[in-house]
Length: 202
Image 1 (cartoon, rainbow, N blue to C red):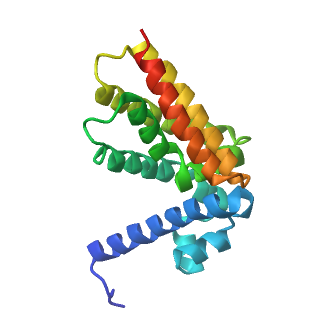
Image 2: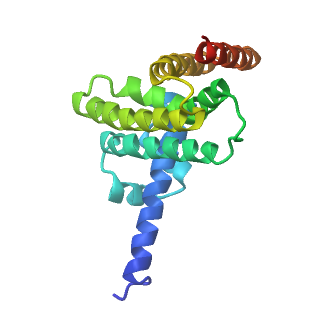
């Protein structure tokens, strides 16, 4: 039987299908949680056949093992998109909050929390998740340092950075339990002002 597509086209289609499944896994995690993110739900969201899914991922665990790196890469892409739009005159506190929020809030942040919790008892997957998220966080901190400039000490920036990450993750949990969106927005605005004061204090 003659293949309908040349080898390179087959490879492109295969990579596209794989990415669709992994993106669908992120959407499913964010919307229905780890417990509800079934193979059937993910396959339906991806718009692919069961056979295509089995070609790439034989089990749910295998799919989520690959989702770890894919999710982290999507977070990195979100960070880079935000970096391209941050005005040069943006205050240091706003830079910190905006970049951390771009990376760890919203759909990607919810998916990340769900995945952390879902694989917490799997030592190997948890180790991999911690590794890739650590690398992402180090890159994020370095990007923040480059934008805020040398006038702010690295120790002070590090402290404000980790406090901001913890606050944003807390706000993500607040969102996941259905709390008030306007209040979260105000909390982030207030925190931005407080971080600016902390970074600039003499």
